[in-house]
Image (cartoon, rainbow, N blue to C red; front, side, top):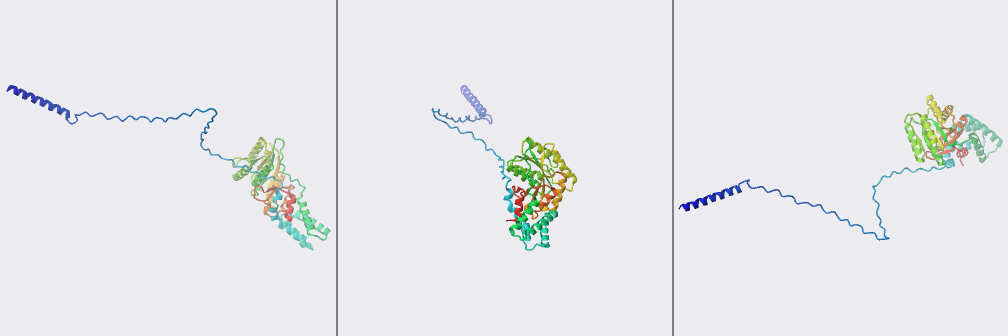
Length: 390
């Protein structure tokens, strides 16, 4: 019995111990958390195997393409224009001149061809000449000369009348005047041309056209933009210079014109050019201070070089007002020649005669249109023939 109880006690104890072990083993939270799984190892992709080039065989050639360069923006300089030479320009432009001046010539020829030339007809002839801005004194001289020759001739054919009038007009214009534009270098020093005139006469445009004409004759030119009171004048001159490759010397707006003229002359000497052309401000001839300044510009240039030409630009359409301007300018600077602009736009071509008579200097240049090559050396015979027509 005792042995039986002992066995029972042992079985119970073993059962309790087993139950306790199971409790500790399977209680909530009692089970150990397994460690996180490690991510699979990522191996780098193998580099592509570049097959080495096959060894060159003797005598073979391999062309290796050049590396590709990024595209570049290329800014091309404007192509320089090649102006025509000045010779023969007025002949080519004669038709333009004839369109404006032929009315005068035809009227005179008609009057002189009448069977009877009484005082009334001669008064009409005189009026026609004065209306064309020939001037009173030159007109009276012409009429007197024509009356004498008509009396000598007696009967007059149309050819004789035309010949008489042509001879008299040429005499008044004086083809023997030296109309040469003096632009020859003085050794290493350039010739200097000073361009003067009143605002609105086409002075800056004439300066640009003159530079273009000289370049067409094979000369190297520097332009001086001494009209510092008008920014547009310097810009305009710059455009003219850029078109034919002539360098332009400028100054600050409102700066000293004489300083710009001096620098332009110095630049011309440094670059060994043929001609320096200085465009001055459009002077109002009533303002004494401005006219004195023009004299200063000329004196400053003469410290570096000789002023070979002083060209006065006149608008042919202004008539006798242009004559008054010419007289005042002549008192300030020694004018050597006249550039008559817009000569194709007026029937008053007689100003050629009157301005030469008053100033004693020749018309050297004629503006016969708005094109860049419409400035021509003045030719008296072409001018008279355009007036009289064919």
